[in-house]
Length: 396
Image (cartoon, rainbow, N blue to C red):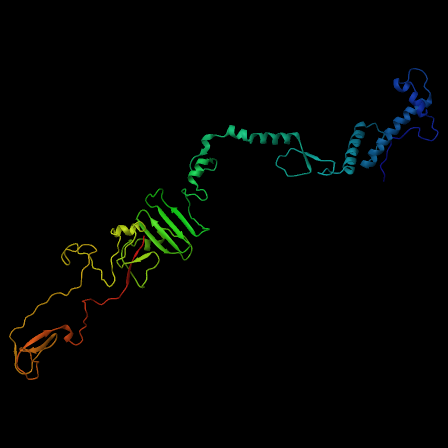
């Protein structure tokens, strides 16, 4: 059902008694209004028709757009509200929403943290953004930065900044020899020849140095104990001296029995050879002469500092082999008949030069030798039972 419109036009029929348009345009009363007296009906009808036509059109627009009756009841406020509602609906129904490419209706917003591209910023939003940009400008930062809040050392602060000076002092730069403080370190070398300084500062107690050469050997040096270890790189991981205590605690220069005829990498054979003390400074502390002892075929004997068993000996002095002296004496023995001798003793030639024969009698010489006794082991030296090892020392 269509909405009713009671605001109707006046004098709209064909041939209505109204003043023609050109005469109405020239009518003096159109500017100043009618004066006292008589007005022609054509003139008045023209005025009423134009006013009623506009009123009817507006009322019809309200009725059709709102789908509600427009009554001739004198309620001006209701008529006004209906017009506003009709205008709003008409705009919403006929004008598109604004986009970046289409002009239309858009909603205003004062938000300063939105990513919406369908809203238009209000002056308030623009001011907020401007004020914020002003507070973070470089000039403003320089003016407001509290110089006392700049750290000159490392720390755990979360509300302070660190200076360039502190960065240079506490954090090593690429390809530099500056100190680097780290916890767990995983290093990959592009060349396989990497040098590290780990631990203390400027050679202080506990400082450790590690060298990796061609991924085949690692040298670990402890400046506290003055010891260095060389060992093969099998896992590819860099070891610290604390990881190799069992090896590192074996003193440089102490002979090590080795079960092969050649020394492993990083070790020297104790064969009397000389070495360059500058290349092996720790070995030079043990052997200031720059020469290793020759332990080929030798036993090692403990130094008798008390002087009761091997008095007069000095460290690293050689001692030849010897047999403890024993003495004996045989005089004027005359054998009658078969001579008798046993063990290490043997009847030699008869005095006068003839050999002894069974049943002979006379005075004979007596020979003595351990080899005469069957089952006794003899050799050119006096020695205990032993196993041959190659003596080597760490080269450090």
